[in-house]
Image (cartoon, rainbow over all chains, first blue to last red; front, side):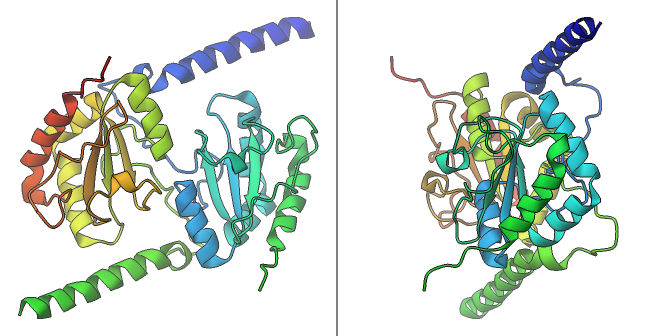
Length: 171
Length: 171
């Protein structure tokens, strides 16, 4: 029974992934009205998102706030479930809004520091305003150190509190 | 006289830049409902925009289409007037939609090739899918070679046609 459900799920995922890959060319009704793309991509429509890593770094320095970078994929089920929990958690949304510069990306940057143990998704990386990637702030999984699952939402919040304690820059 | 006008212009630019820089902190009513940010930023809500330069380059190569990068500032009046004309011109929108990978940025990238004669805005730079910045496709103004004004919209369209003729890569 569970196996049967899993098969159905796998088929659904496969369909979702293939339609996602084809998206920019095929999924768009050329005549129909499209929904404008948002920078939040569902991770919190009411938050202020940076568009690019360069912009996010600029704001982190200018406002002396830590940066939180969320790497995800539109049709990855793990990303989707994490996104839902993230967007619905009032504490997370409040802290993200008030104390962080935030950026969510579906394409990797060229900066290797943002993938200390590979480009797995969903992956959440904190960057100190001193421009230091906080590779020390990790999730629960030793093989994907920056991954979080919906059940890890409290850990994520406590990691955000950790990231808020800024590194002291040398004088 | 020209010197006087220049001073006024410089003050205006300074005001525009500072108000634009202050935006994420000040322009937002913390209690009120915010409008979700869009990737189009008003340059064409119905078009499919890349989020970052890396993503745009990826799509340009993958789809063998030229990339058009629009640099602008939210509170620059020249950017605003160009944006209005760009968004309302059906020919421009159609060609941008069908034949280009498009990206609009309010923050500069680290790639110096995208500012061949400085970081003036609004500035439109074409990039061939061979990854070559088309520094040869310019507007009307010798001191800001990649700038366009609303009256230059036909020139922009003809430059888009030029960019569609892809560079031949050497065999």
